[in-house]
Length: 167
Ligand SMILES: Cc1cc2nc3c(=O)[nH]c(=O)nc-3n(C[C@H](O)[C@H](O)[C@H](O)COP(=O)(O)O)c2cc1C
Image (cartoon, rainbow, N blue to C red; front, side):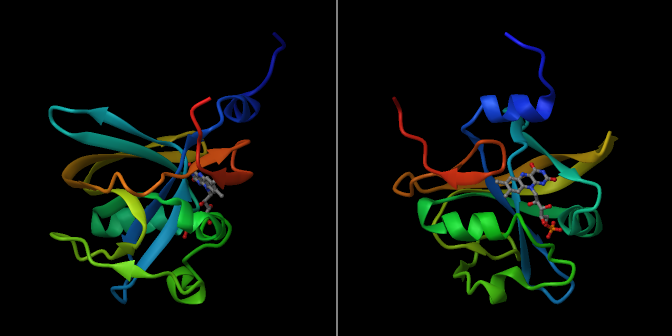
């Protein structure tokens, strides 16, 4: 083995999870941001966490509204998943610009992309600065799933997204 850094290690752990984090903009529309660094934290009570750059618009919206939906995109959404990770919703409308088909989620005012495998509706519990990121710790309100949708994963760090096949 040779000495590497964490960024290089994230390439060696590929495929990594990938999500589209859905938050509500001031006009009620949804902003989508691609996030790999999320995890289940607790089953009892149900809690999840994710880490986002301090500069992200998503973080700003989560802190303002305290509400967020974490979705796992299906394979139909591979282009969109990459695009939502390359621009900020602060000055663009990613959903309209990319003509992303959205659908309502019961119990939440945040709309989510069609073709999602999982949707976890959460309430922000607390957030902590962790170096150049902020860790968002959330209480889970409701979880929805569709096993027919094939999940995407991120490969080679953030370089590409594709399904994972059991080898
Ligand atoms: C595959 C992929 C995974 C990503 N994972 C993360 C992540 O875990 N945390 C993060 O802060 N940014 C991550 N990004 C970058 C954000 O999606 C990007 O900064 C985005 O522009 C943030 O959008 P926002 O400003 O609308 O929130 C990822 C990008 C890609 C393409």
